Structure formats: structure tokens, C-alpha cells
Length: 362
Image 1 (cartoon, one colour):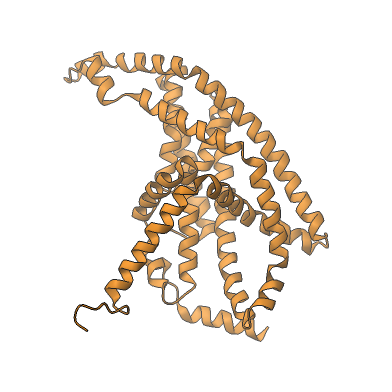
Image 2 (cartoon, helix red, strand yellow):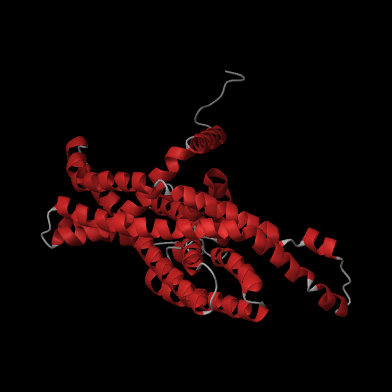
């Protein structure tokens, strides 16, 4: 009929898909208070799955294995939350003094700028380059992080139920689906890849944060555990995360220790991130688990707008999980290739068929 719409039209399908994405993002934004703890619990639960399987292979009863893992999470998370919350409160209390001293240091650069033929007034300098605004942004992000830590026990409770569900999920799937073995095989491949990414990335980030904390502590910078935690969290963001993590620590070092020590702290950040990001992580992660720099930047903006500081932290893991999920289907594999960082992400489909055949033989 004239003027009628063909629902099979590719253009209409794309419009419906775009509308569905917008509705989903709006729903996630509206349910931020619920979604963030659940996503963090999923993140922690996936990381805890390999230790759970390791303990059960040692003949430890599943309930006891879960109790061991949860006890570690409670002790480690409680101590970390207490130390970090105290450091955040102290930093925010001292923030006005830090800002005044930082502005004084910036004004002290005016004679040097004049010698280089760039006469700038103090008002112009602080208007166009005001480091106090950066410190304000850091304080707001740390406040959000402190508020997130107050949900720690809720997150741990969700992790407990996720681990309990993980033990019985294959049995439920076999009872619910007629072709459960194929679904389980596809799901297991997806979970293995997600586990590999999250475990390796979390381990590298933990080592990165520990090295940064030790370096700034050795140089006498205030709140070393706080800067180590920020470096660990921001290490999940490739390319720009290490730069964002270093800025507040370097600004504080300028105020507290002076420009020479601040240069040493900056060199420590550069050295640690070069070694961990360019040597250690690619050695274990492989080339296939990567994202395009443009996708990294857009993911940071999107998830940061949706969920604030927590969204920035979760942006790359969430995008990476989406990429791995898209790789599991031949119809969406092209999207995963576009999200990847190069031709190394393209895998030979015959390899997957060989894997499936070997699994069926077993």
C-alpha cells in the first residue's frame, strides 16, 4: 500500500535499534542508585569465580569456599574502605589550603614567563589555567568514591548470591533449555574470555597501584594509599587513565614538595605505566583483547555521564565485556571488529569450529 512502512526495511530496523538503545540508556541513568552496586557486584563476582573453582577443585565444599572468599572480601574491603575514607576526609579538609598554595606557586611562574617574552597577568593565568578547578574535580570524584564505599556490604551481599547462583546455573540451564549443551558451551567460552580479561587487568592494576603508592610514599607525598588506589582504578582506562591518575598527585607534589620532587613523582608514574602497560600487560593479555582509542574515549564519556566516577571506572570493563559478547555471534562479529584496536582482533572462524568439534568429541 502507498505510504505504508515495511517493518523488514533495514533503515527502519536501524531506527528501532537506535531507539531501543536510547531507552535502555535512559533507564540505566534513572536507576543509577541500583545499577551501580549490581554492576560492581558482577565485576567482583566474575573476578572471584576462578578462586571459587580452584577451591572446589581442592575438594572444599562450595559453601565453605564461598565463605572463605567472602570473608577475605569483607576484611580486605573493610580495611580498604576505612583507610581510604579517612584519607578522603583529610584531603577534602585540607583542600582549601592546598588550593591557595597551588595558586601561589602558579603566580610564582609569572617572572619566568615574562623572561620568555610572554607577559601574562596573574588574573589571566588563573583564569585560563586554574589548577584549583582540577583539585575541585578531584575532590568531587573522591567524594563519590567515598559514597560508593558505603555500599560495600550491599555489594558483598550481592556477590554472595551471585556465587551461590553460579554453582547451580548449569543445572538450571540444562533443565530449562532443550539444547542446553550448546548454550553452555557458548556461555563458557564467553565467561572464560571475560574472566581472562578481568583477572589479568585487575592484577596488573593492583600491582600498578601498589608501585605508585610505594613510590609516592618513598618521596614523602601525603595520602600515598589514596593515590595508589586512584592509579589502580584509573589503570582500567587505557591511554588516558594513567594521565588522569597522575594529575592530582603531581599538583599536590608541587604544593607540598616543590617542582623537583613533583618531577620525580611524574617520572615514577611514567615509568610504572610504561612497564606495566607496554610490557607486562600485553605479555599476558594478548593482542585480541583490546579496544580502539576512539572507542575508549567515547566509552569514558558515555559511562561517565551515566554513572559519574563509578561509570568512568567501569567504562572499559563494560565495553570490553560487550565486545567479547559480540564476538560470540557471526552476525555481530563485525561490530566487535569495529570496536577493536586493529586487525589483530579478527579471528579465524574455523578455529572456533575446531574448538567446538573438540568439545563435542570430549
